[in-house]
Length: 356
Image (tube, rainbow, N blue to C red; front, side):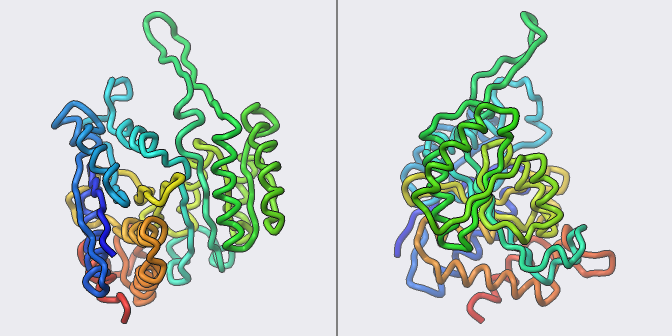
């Protein structure tokens, strides 16, 4: 196979962790007959500095030509003014919209060797393996809004959904659940929000197309508790944009660190955008201590969903598990007496563990 990968390293620790993800991707190519062509693009704060745009047209063109996009992170103190006209995060939001990537999959797998890294009791973490499916291109992040300013001290953001926006991601979530444990949980705020009541109606209608999948609904505030009290009960969690953003970050506690969680942003076709869920972490950028495993596991998702290379994707995940079982830890995962490895060392360890 020959595939073109758009590489958007971005800001902060983005370039560091993406470098390790690419190291693993190159190793997969070297040990198979696959060829990966990399095309780089600027995004976020560094793109603003260079061109005045958080998503230059040239970068968008690179992504449109690619079979998949590997993304790092955007943002940092230099671009942190929330009132600025152009902000780094706008580049990522626009890219998802332009590529039609309406579904964000955030798998949460608890590796047995990392239960000590989580603040939760180990018995709560046994066999936890779930996926948060977050709607990505509608909702409150994209609805009509008004900033507070000289004409009005009031501000508002509008949560807006159409039946089709809900239906398309519901079908994706049900299909995913049918390939896993046939359990889907819709998380909403239907006791208060009109949009959530629409979600319930549309998702219930889609459920009829997947009779083998058990559907339950839970209010988002209750889910925030259940996710930490009984995480093993959940398989596929479907929810709106903002709720998914918050819950998936909360779920990082289960895995031991936000640095462990990958994500895949998908649309109707095979092309997707793959990224760790952590941010740009400017406080540790350049220090060589960032955890690259979220990015490396995002490479595994890229191999599986965009390139259809399931065996290679499993090999990457297995290599990560092997490295962790042998006690190797970046700073975010290590206990007080545990030796840590650098970002680069962790990438090298994963490469060495591939297919061994």
